[in-house]
Image 1 (cartoon, helix red, strand yellow):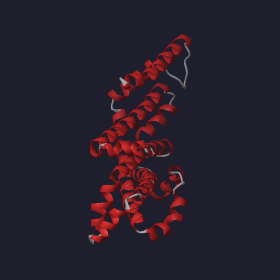
Image 2: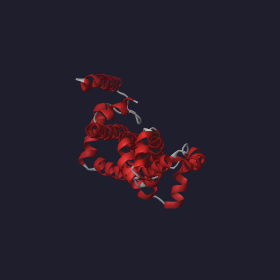
Image 3: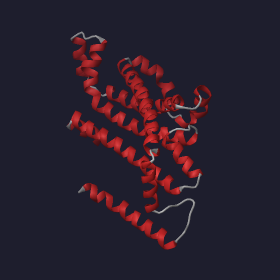
Amino acid sequence: MKLLKALVLPVALLIVWEIAMRVSGVQSDSLAAPSQIAVAFYAAMLDGTIPRRTAETLRAALTGLAIGGGSALVASIVLGLVPPVARLMQFSIEVLRPVPAVALIPVAILSLGFGYGMEISLVAFATFWPVLIYGHAAIANIEPQLLDVSRVLRLSTFGRVTKVVLPATLPRYFVAFRLATAVSLIVAVTVEIAANPLGIGYELMTASQSLHPDLMFALVLWIGLVGWGLNGALLLAQRRLFGPAAMAEIAR
C-alpha cells in the first residue's frame, strides 16, 4: 500500500508529460516522451548496453567502496582507541575531507591514466571519509564501562576490537557503509561522465552528445533505480542483521 501511494505522484507526472509531448507535437533534441524513453530503455536492455555498462559502473563503485570503506574502518578504530593519534591527524583530516573527489580527476588521470584504476581510486577517496567520521564517532560513544571491563580482563588490542568495539559499533558502521554506497555510485557515474570511457556515465554522455534524449533519460532513470535497489538491499540486510538496533540508528 505504501509503495502504491508513493507511485501516485510519479505516475501522474509521467501521464501529464506524455500528454503534453503528444499534444504539442514538438520534436526536441533535449526532451522525449515517456513512451519513447520506455522503448529506448527496452532496446538498450535487449542489446545488452545497459547490463554491460551497469556492470562496469558497479565494478568500479563497489571495488572503490570496499577499498575506501575497509581502510576507513581500520583507521577509525585506530583513531577511536588511540586519542593521541586522533589529535595528531585531526588537522589533516579536516583539510582533506572537504576536497571533492571529482576535483582530483586531473591528478588521477596523470597518475593512473584512464580505466578502472583511476575511477576506483577516486571512489575509494570519496567513500573513505563518511565511514571514517561516522565510525570514529561510533567508537567515541561506546559505553566507557565496556572498555574498562576489557582492560580488567586484560584483553589484547585485537581482543578489545573483536569482542568489544566491533559488536558495540557494527550497527553504526553499517549505516556508514549505506551512506558510502550512495556516494560510491554518485562518484563513479560522475567520473565516467567527466573523464572515463566506461560505465553508465559514459553511455549517458554519449547519448546526450549524439542527441538521443530518449536513451539519455532512460539511463538517468536507470541510475536512480540502481541506487534505490542498492539502498533497499542494504536496508533490508541491516534490519535482518541488527533488528531494533538498526531502526534506532536509522532514526538518528
